[in-house]
Figure 1 (tube, one colour):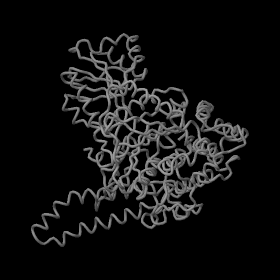
Figure 2: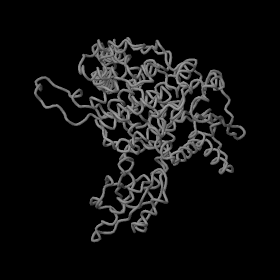
Figure 3: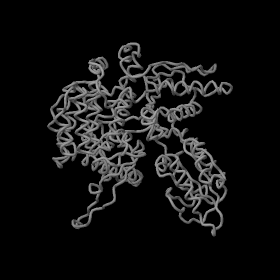
Figure 4: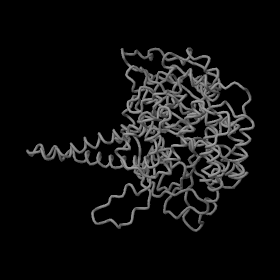
Length: 628
């Protein structure tokens, strides 16, 4: 089921199996039949660790979503609440317990806090008078969840907000604990590099935890050579930009949640001859996206411009494989062809799905075929020959939006009110779209002139409502939207020194990470690339311009555990993004891993997988009030 987790440089299935073992042990503590009441947010992350079959093996007979009122009837001995340590959830649990039917046979209640037990939550249960109703109160330390063969996430949706807005370092503690768990399974990481205040805190906590357990030396040969801790606020620009990889665009347009995407069903309807008038399906098409699917692993990190050619090539290969049946003459040849059929049919279904997804994306982005600004002149040219044009209005909006983004990233007119943003506000476009653009202009200009900032704020509040003053205040606090306090703008210097803009980014056959944004090289990934070669000393001055300290720590290894590197063997670096990472950044790091002369392979970890929309939404005080 999770074989793809063991295909990479590091076998992440070991981490998954350790998490499954702990889950089984807790379930076995609650003897007899069980019903699980889920904090709804946890069902997705848990699905990556254990399917229902595992729970069923340990006498889980029913599963419910945590809601107010009474727990639905279930003929079981144990009710287990799987919840995050949130006070508002404790009130719901208390209501569930108090409304238990006294006439029914008594059931035992248990709580499993994920990822940590909370004294505040237990105090709330005590105040509600239900604390003594629980037989077991325990914690399930699910810090880092394996998403793919080279990707781990804590799925802490509010980590960035907590760290940078609320000054709450709980998620940093969980990060440090998660990294200690990782070292217990994969060996001590000898070198730690970091950039940013949060990175410094995490490194300090790790080193302190290591000192506290100094008596128990880890005797595992290190799998990772280096850990790089990166604060999200070191690179505020990248998540605001529209991702242009296949996986990135799926996430931008439809949203990928816990490895799944829900898509409009009409493109996936299988119409048979004579069924022209049949109703189309109305339920969204739900697809799992990971490297277990061969075609998806091949195309997910490509710039969308290169996806059409890849799908076309795959279609020819599959078609040729099916044609082989005509050449099968002997019983042995026929038998061999039949044995390959399941794999071939799966490949054909996969191709059909991704062609449909590509059509959906192209309906929105097709205007790119005529996009000539900077490096995007050939964007989607090939793809436009493969798939038909549609949704002209939508594609024009996408095109105009990207034009403005690229102007900001190259330093064009960042110091004055942008007419496109004004037009978007007057049309009452989605508020998050406006906020992404205004924040991008602010970041690229090292803050906005007070007059420009006040104009934007006034326009937004008058159009979308004065309740959003809290959101604007939040964006200012975290540094995304701020007044210019100095006439010096460091962004052009950073852009030129780190080569963040490449005029001739090759999207079909990339030779640089800038292909993931069709010209813009993510600052976070460029820093990672330069750390590996030639090292950060070469960019000392630029590092000082970026927020927070940069540092290096070394962890002593027990005698005999120093890795003897074979000639030509790559180093393995774990890059941890504190505050979230985008799929485009992940694609750029995978590109670096695959470079022949790179010398380093990367495993990516993060507090949360994000895109510009989900990131801004996490900072809104009333995200449900956004105009969509």
